[in-house]
Length: 246
Image 1 (cartoon, rainbow, N blue to C red):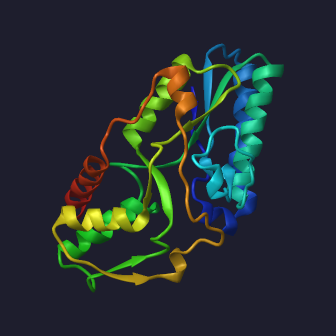
Image 2 (cartoon, helix red, strand yellow):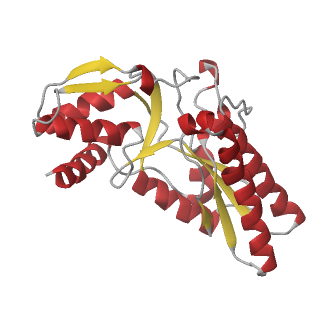
């Protein structure tokens, strides 16, 4: 079983911290209780988040699973709490539980509440001559570690099959890129020139300037590594948005 149900955006967690706690932590507790009551004997993968690492010193990159946790949002606090609960159950209730800590991921099917898909939608709208032709952005000079969602799903499957009980695994590419680079690649692949305007509503209250993870532990225990090239991921997202907007 893969537990993905959660409030998934950091921005929303600042607006609704109580709901974030109820869904992310209490929802996880309720799931574990339901599994116990139904004599669950399979494997459970709890999907946490790299957001739990918080602000990480550049000297500590790439970030490993041993990095100290320093949450800077209600979202991250609730994800740590739920992760700890799952790990506790792996010991006290004899559940086989593993934890994934995915970094930024993107790909076809992603909501435009997330940055790459939002850029792809805006760029496709500009290409189709809609709106004023301006791409509205937040902080595009921060770096992040992006992985195609199809590689991420493959990692989840391998963790379920081969992951060690009670262990946490980073799911990432090990490569940091600026958000600006992704925006520019999307525009180039779409064949358009863009004008950019900073939008304060798209800026986060707390922001890590750089982020890069290590998937060495995941590779060692499961054999996983990322396979889908960045440009293929971006092309596939653009193709999907072009079809939606046409």
